[in-house]
Each structure stands twice: as structure tokens, then as C-alpha cells.
Amino acid sequence: MLPFGGPKGSAISLIIDALCGVLTGSAFALNLNTLENLEAEQNLGHVFVAMRTDLFMTKDEFAGRMDEIVRMLKSSPPAPDSDRILAPGEMEGQNEAQNRVLGIPLLPSVIDQLAGLGAELNVSFPAAIRKEAPAEAHS
Image (cartoon, rainbow, N blue to C red; front, side, top):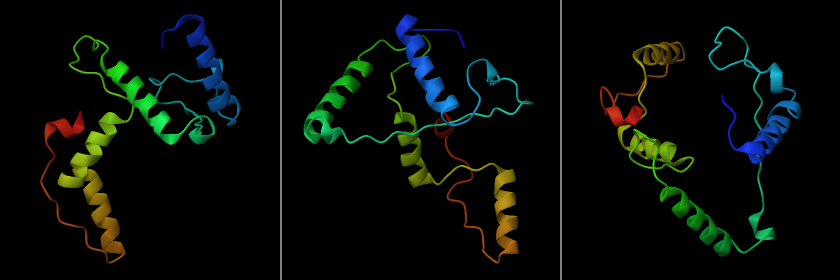
């Protein structure tokens, strides 16, 4: 990946690397493999943070401020070849809603594996809702 964000981007990158690599005992900095190198172990670490926002402000104030920043984000011009701005998690939320209606799209090989495991355990595989999900389910 190319560097971005100048000094602030560099500082954010260092913080992420320290939390996800150094702290977790995973690869960091020059020890990281490229995502394109599928032959090498990636050895990636992840950190999840939970915060009590009510220690800083009321729940309603925080929700209003979050709504404001999302509105600002969505009013930005979209990237070339893109028709809209998506907030983090928005695409996943849309896919989840669609999957709740249509079911989870599975590759035939995965269906065969699950049906085989089910047969071994005497659990029948559920019938498909549709043969395949619409193309937008995979975008």
C-alpha cells in the first residue's frame, strides 16, 4: 500500500501497527507479508476496543454527533467509478438484510461439504430459498 495522510496518517498507521501487531504478538512493520503473497503465512493480529461513550457525553449527544459525522462523510464526492459513499459497515448491513430475506448465498462446493457433514451426523440440510442470490448480493 502506498503511504497516505502525511504525518497524521503516519501516526495513525504506527498506532494501528503497535496495537494489532506488536501488542498481539503478530507480524508488524517490515515483518508483514504482502496480501498478494498467498503462499506466506500472513500472521495478522486484530484488536477490538469497547468504549463507554457515556463517560464523555450523554448517549443522545454522542448519537447526534455520530449522525453529523456520517452526514458529512456521505456528502463527500464519491470516488471515480462509484456512485455513492458508504459508511463503514453499511455494505455489510445491506448484505445482512438481504441474506435474512433470501438466505445466505453458498457456493455449490460448500453446500456439498455441509450436506456431507449433515449426513454423517444425521442432520438434513435445509432446502434452498433460491438457487442463487441476485448479483447485487455479491457486490
